[in-house]
Length: 142
Image (tube, rainbow, N blue to C red; front, side, top):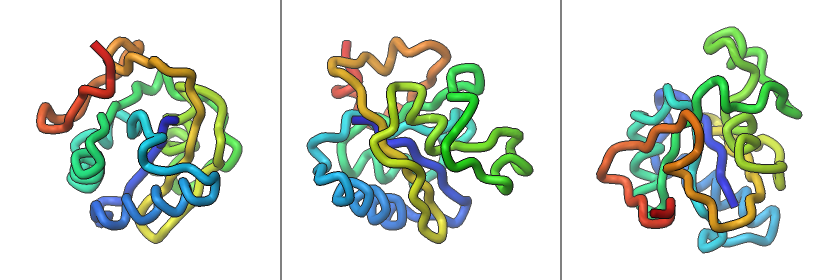
């Protein structure tokens, strides 16, 4: 399962992990079900996303505009105004499969869950970029 994430500048790793954990509980999933965190490529350097992925030992993958889903079930006017796209969390997750959980929000983070059929090689996904080399990529495939 893929976790699509969006985060405000002020978000912390604790904010990210709290919302992701809440979303997983809503679908009776656990962190062992998580293959990777994904976000828009512009968010790859966000310290909270990097720290959260590192803490859980999953990869953080950035999705290019061209690979993000064009439509999202719960678009954000704020995100559209700021970034020119209606979604970060949902559109990133939907690049890998159908949504299991639409966008959920906390004060600083958005999260959406998508199902994929493993094995998925995130390093071979078109137009994606891996986060800092300090983020483990062993789950991303060869």
